[in-house]
Length: 258
Image 1: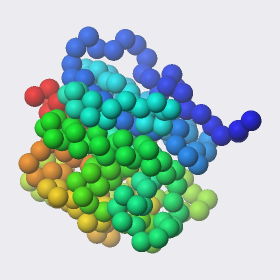
Image 2: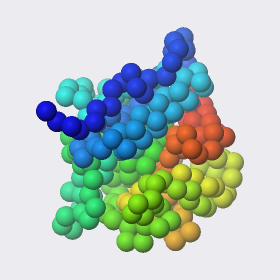
Image 3: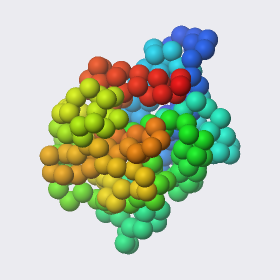
């Protein structure tokens, strides 16, 4: 019998009845990706539950699409929702962004989930529905538009904890003035919660980098014409700013309502 932890839907679903109306959001996340350990499983539980609870609190309805499930539907069906939210998780398969050989410190790769999410992003963007990507979700957005990733950040100290330290830390990012993200966050300088070893490298077609870390690493992208935003950090980390999370999610849902 496997000793691997399992994340169940009931552990991430918010309490209480869903709103009677409000925008319908498809939430794509792999609850049980490869290499899952109990500490990471607990992060998945906390972060996913915080994201779903925030959607409920803001009056949105959601459909949780577990991209690690045995059976997945047609990713193009995601375009039938008012918007899509892609949450964090394991690394994206290096073949999808042209990685040159094995990726150092690769973790949690699930090509089937990657392919589903990328196809969903393309379908939703083509339908001109809003897309919000978080961490892995932001990386998938960039790849869906033809971009690439930094496979492994050699100097990771600003972006995640080191050996024997908590994975997530506070990171300073600067948001580009006049960008959609700047309007959403209401600030040009943010302290965010980060825990990543990869990041956007070449920005995808139609996208532009709109936030950077102090070392120049790209921390957010957005589409120049469509409502597509990806942030490398985790606004759904309950140890981060509630105000920042509510502003970002509220702006996303306002776009979905339109």
